Length: 277
Image (cartoon, rainbow, N blue to C red; front, side, top):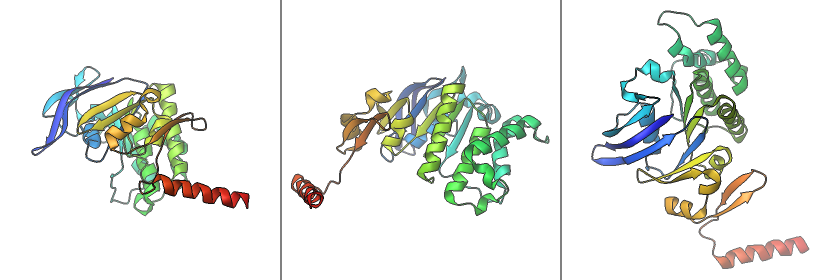
């Protein structure tokens, strides 16, 4: 479990997180949603110890995360960020093996277990197909899958995803989300993911956390919290939320704001006319 206790954080004189408290339980998939600038990425950076809260604390297990060494944190938490840059021409396999560094001594070589874990993760993520290619030669989506595989090879109980699927096509997004959800169900891992796509989040998440102005505006089980009133309050847009039998969850439907009722009715009449003809 990772617990956030009354944390606050500001960049200069601009508050980003204000007196926020939350408990993340093991074996659940959490998604953080909210408008740009509401504090989603900052919250993740506080959770993993990259930032120090100005007040409050983040507790991982029984320890204040700021009292833990970077190596110990890396054995507990892995991160996939959308903005991770690799400028040196490592091979894909070398980058994925970097996820095993917390378990390898400073001058030691990877063990057979490390190699086995990396090979298994690369096969499951489909990165084994370009294992020997230079990471600098990859497309944006391929590079993101490489970074994702590196985080999975870290084999931590807590996985943080910061817009981790932004550069991927829908096929690889679904494949990796299914993989991660399986880890949550079968290995009791905790996943905390920042999403912009509400509907993608709703399909794979156990719980949704809506943030607004550095605070939790609403949170709860996906089927309970996915509703038009919360979406309008947080994002200031109207929507219609309905259960979708194909996805197996509630989905939000939007429409172009320039359409008034008369233009919508006109489109329906034109479509009906074409079908009849």
